[in-house]
Image 1: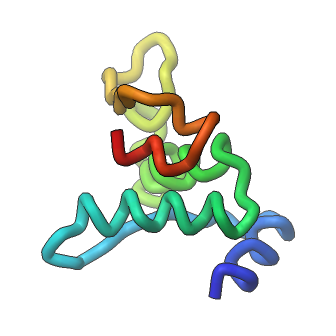
Image 2 (image 1 turned 135 degrees about the vertical axis):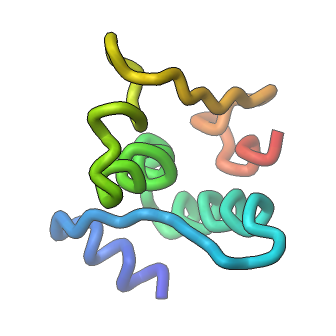
Image 3 (image 1 turned 120 degrees about the horizontal axis):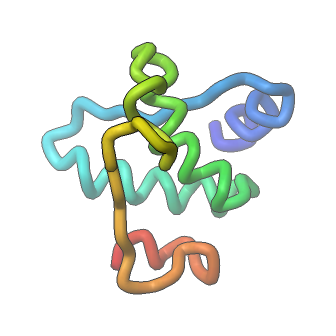
Amino acid sequence: MMYYLKRAHDKGVTLRIGTDCRFGGRALLSELILLNNAGFPMEDVLQIATLNGYKSMNLDDKYGSIEVGKKADFLLFDKNPFVNAKNVLS
């Protein structure tokens, strides 16, 4: 499945993450790691997890990126996910 997601991404298909799982937060973090392990650069992984979701809901004028006039929406990590994808768990 990750192979096909990566191919779609490379061809310009906009991906986003969502879940209806009971443990949605943990599942989402695991999916971020899986995407990175499948060859997605961490920059793209974080965009898929943030801005792309807001774009799909037409809320990207208010959320999803750090810009003047947008509402703050931060995710802070204790360890750098650009060094190791598993650091999204920190």
